[in-house]
Length: 59
Image 1 (cartoon, helix red, strand yellow):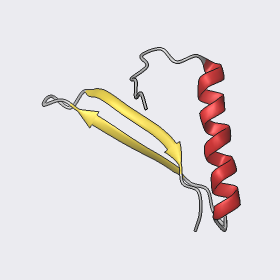
Image 2 (cartoon, helix red, strand yellow):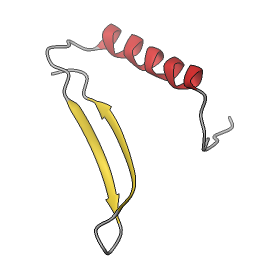
Image 3 (cartoon, one colour):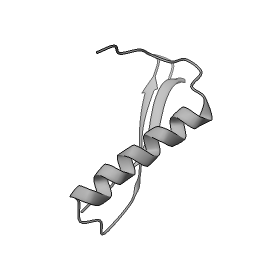
Image 4 (cartoon, helix red, strand yellow):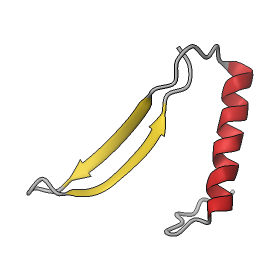
């Protein structure tokens, strides 16, 4: 197994991941609500230096 960090992922790769995650979730979860979710990393001065955004999937 090889794990890589990709700095500039192609949109096709991002779409592929979204599709596979949704496929797994729909098959294994009762979906009643999808809500936005984000993580932010700020430096000592309060400036955002990193983050991630997604949505919840399930109850």
